[in-house]
Amino acid sequence: MQIGLGFWASKTLLSAIEMEVFTEVAKRPADLKTLQGRLGLHPRSARDFLDALVALGFLVRTDGVYHNSPDAGTFLDKSKPSYMGGILEMANHRLYPFWGSLTTALRTGELQNEAKGGGAGLFEALYADPARLKEFLRAMSGVSHGANLAIARQFPWAGYKTYVDVGTAQGDLAVQIALANPHLAGAGYDLPEVGPIFEEYVAHHGLTGRVAFKAGNFFTDPLPTADVVLMGHILHDWNLAEKKMLLAKAHAALPKGGAVVIYDSVIDDDRSQNAFGLMMSLNMLIETKGGFDYTGADCMGWMKEAGFRETRVEHLVGPDSMVIGIK
Image 1 (spheres, rainbow, N blue to C red):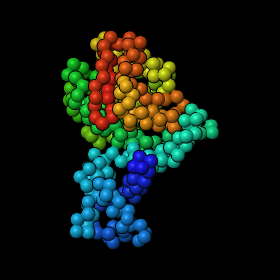
Image 2: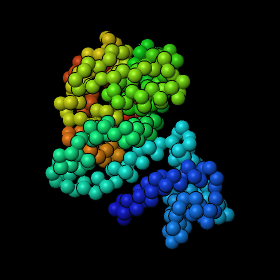
Image 3: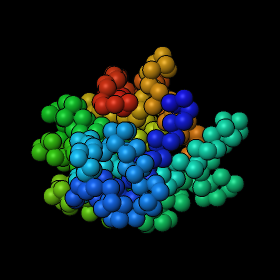
Image 4: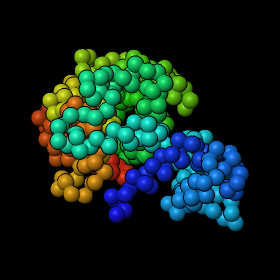
């Protein structure tokens, strides 16, 4: 029952994020009547909605006054740099309705997003609309931030001087690596439309001059050369031939001894434990023409086929792991 009706809790949270409940409560905790007015809630639903958020662990009610829980205050308050609600905003606006067609996707093997019926593909549609692109790139930072922090500290950066983050989006991975490793010079690589958003994010963190943007298309252009090539939440977007092509391009961009770092919600080799990774693969069914998630063994096999001499898998945070290949 909890899983079958899980969309109740999901949509309660997503609507709260859409209405910026946690950002508003962070500004000033308040009682029911005050929050009802500040959030524009109808009297019939306000109490049940706020108390449901209490029961779910997102709000705390003390003497009739609602406060954020520690986790909600950290991760769901838009005014904080730790805000990760961007991916949940996108889930609310896009993924929630698309997942209603999962059965159709499972029976047809066809995507169920904006491109259903011959419309523009996911990335074509997003990159053509600056507002939606910015929301998407912010969402990618939200879903990747924890893993980015782990990579910035966990990978043995002392032996390298340069890196490039391929499919950099807003640039959070490139930024976190630079912040944690002052000796490195880095770059983010993505389509030209991403440049201004990336540069704004880099400047916000005081890294202009150390972290550069490089424009290009990784399907048609060679990857920029660097000691370390990274791809975060990129490889799972593409079919098997495209995955192998990207790994081959990474190999060509590296010097001997260089490293490729691939991270996604890597599925456990037994395919029985990482439920998030498996459902992320179903999300790729919804969102892409041929994308799918994969096991660590799968990725290491592709890396060896591309010419990497050493490979290993390391857990990062939550469902995410990185697969490392050494040339």
